[in-house]
Image (cartoon, rainbow, N blue to C red; front, top):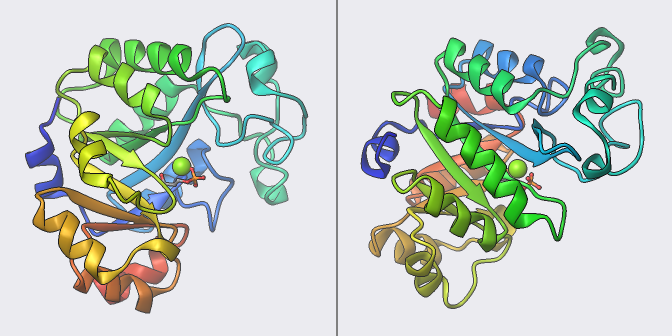
Length: 251
Ligand code: G3P
Ligand code: MG
């Protein structure tokens, strides 16, 4: 596993959100390929669990928004999930895209030479089983040399990830930055804090970076805002539109 120091040393300033979800159906293999084609070298995707404990790439706990089906993903088998169309909701040319398995996604990340920020996104109540199955699979398959950063809004997922993958860099994911962020970063052994763009201030950035932690901000789609945040010391911005950012920022 690549250490936090090495990972953040080589992390680009632009991270593709759910692949490149401004252009392609989020969290699909098409979205990963689009991110790479646009010149992104690091992407964020969400992973959750099916009824039969398969780790799959999906943001919502219900498949309604991003497929032609409906209902909680946790109550569907992998076979049922794989039968869904995860592309046509976005645009007709993506008809036939599937919800990828974690293995398919990580194989694609490797083939494209990307780094990965994997967000563990459990159905509420299923934090521990989700993290247990996801991290067990990563332990088995993840190629040592590919940068991997695991993040979650759910601290139970961070705790489980740390148990299974003692060396993986962890990201504390939040909307607003909690007042006791420094205690939490230490408690959950996180190398980075990932926060929502509305809540971050120049003072936060100075304090977090000054304490030796890294900082990622989501979801930043305005290049001027990205530039300001990066000038203030943010490590990377997570964006739906890497192509808008890259001309202004570089990689
Ligand atoms: O990981 C950053 C961002 O993806 C967190 O929010 O809802 O887009 O998964 P969300
Ligand atoms: Mg996410």
